[in-house]
Length: 234
Image 1: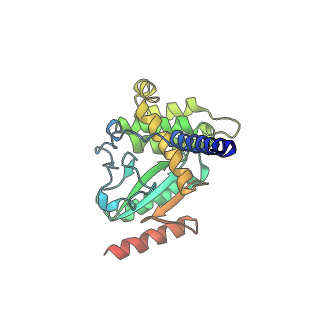
Image 2 (image 1 turned 60 degrees about the vertical axis):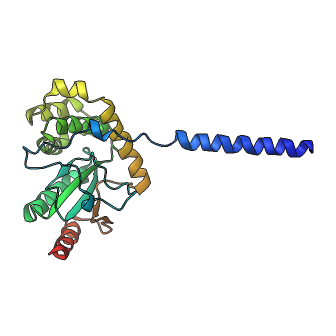
Image 3 (image 1 turned 180 degrees about the vertical axis):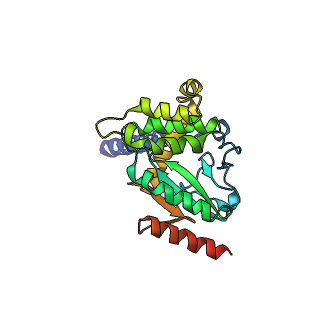
């Protein structure tokens, strides 16, 4: 056999092996659903695992079964919110989410996805995840949003203030600090980070209603989109 052909063939095979191996390494490790429990049902928000009929289309990265859920499991309309606890716009939009739930208590559920873009947001997300495991997710979420101007400072996150706010809202801080770096919570952050890349989320909050993106951002626009979906279910 021609020596040049042998060299070319060997080089091509090496490149194939390299890229196949690289693609396998780059795949994110999925979270262990068995280790991540839903929001407890003793709060105003329920967090059961999303039912199949409410899931995004198969293979979609929009909804993961471990994600916190506010609202009834069998609600016909699903809002997916990619949010950052340190995001000012997320804080500003939260009253709209609250009003939507108030207007449609049995028709709408909100699936919360994490997009930790700001300084200190990853720790705030870990606080929320430990709160979810303790059954106080929504109360801690509200506390972090209310105190956000104090702890999410542009000159540097004051996470001691965030922890104190979570404690006042009912979080067992000692236990939370023990659980915050668990494999289950690490996997949640890893998978959510991978999903925001897959979906191309570049800002927070980003909303999807019934699997469709909210293209014209604003509280009135979100309210109208949700109302249209609710009306279509009647």
